[in-house]
Image (tube, rainbow, N blue to C red):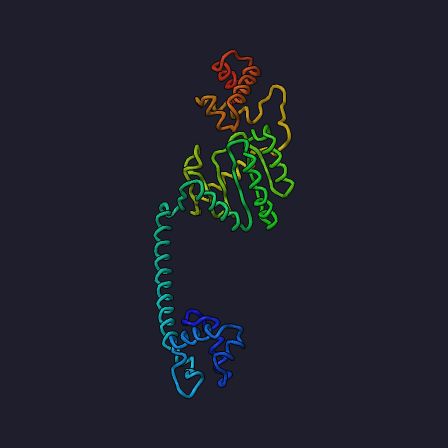
Amino acid sequence: MTDALGVNKWTILVYRAMALHRDWGVEKVAEDLGITAHQVRECLDELAEASLIRPSGDSFDGMLLINPSVALAPQLAEQETALEEFRKSIARNRHLVAELTSVWQSAQETQGIGVLLKGLDAVRARLAELCEQAETELLSFIPGGAQSRQSLESSRPLDERHLARGVRMRTVYLTSVRSDRPTREYASWLQRAGGEVRIAPVLPLRMLIVDRSTAVVPLSPDDSREGALVLTARGVIAGLTALFDRVWEDAERLSAEPAHEPGRLTAQERELLRLLAAGHTDEVAARHLGTSVRTARRMVARLMELLNAHSRFEAGYKAAQRQWL
């Protein structure tokens, strides 16, 4: 019996004393419970309201105790009815949630190819889920050059957990990360922890492939905040996986310093030439390479020196002659 039945703890104790000691009066019950006679009479009023006692000339202080299973049966029945209605309400709500979830999922689907994620928060949440669900392999392209310290530090415990679970991690960064100490140190740590890291002068897009069955790519290559697509169609995944494998094979292993051979181009410089020959500005070329505009221009100056060219047009002409393009 609880307050839900209309009686409190002291009222229950008074009822129990009355049931066990039919010859006790109000004063004796009060003494036994350590409360006043006035409090006992208040409890008797509660018991009467709950139909647990009724007036009688033959019982305790003119009161007859009633069997609780009889007296409280109507209240219990009322509560059971309310509980049943509550359960029905929960069942209806579950059905509604399932229906709305189905509508939401349908709205996210993009012609059966994958699921649309709108906004950076939704992308981050889904990436975390997919990485935790990975069983065998995580493949990723990380363009953009140097990574922020905050991003690197938040990634460290996650990467440790994936590697500890036996998930193979292969990551391709831009070559420019060799010039950024925090990113370079993180990539080196990742290799020591069991991950595999390579670098490439440019990357086609930001991408994560999980277990060669699911891929996440941005809606816009220039602004990841717009959202992403989670792709699961086998043909699309096969193409993206082949792209990763090709870039991985051509990528360099990470080293502390780039290898410069006199009179020869690095992979990054060759890519810069290709970007400039395609008509891209220094700013666009720098963004593709993950470097600052100043660094890109310094590389252009070195190329012109290698080619002994006095203008960019002449540099392009001489680079074509040498089959550097």
